[in-house]
Length: 69
Image 1 (spheres, rainbow, N blue to C red):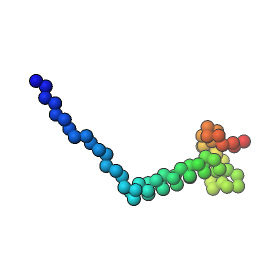
Image 2: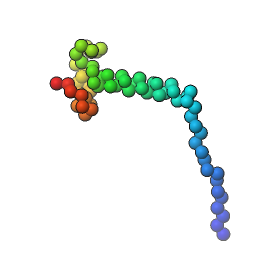
Image 3: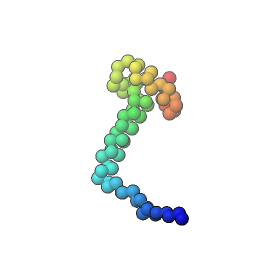
Image 4: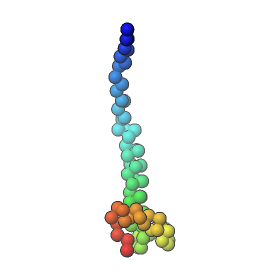
């Protein structure tokens, strides 16, 4: 005889907005910083002197459609 034991379905617990919001803001800030370094870190808006950041993100810049030369 086969005896099957049924388990109750597990329901994921909802994440309260108060716990999710700080992580969403943090992720948004990291995203904005990444977009700045890939898209605008050169010339008059440069924070880091030299071409080090430009050369580091050069291929990613072209992949995302940012012109650089």
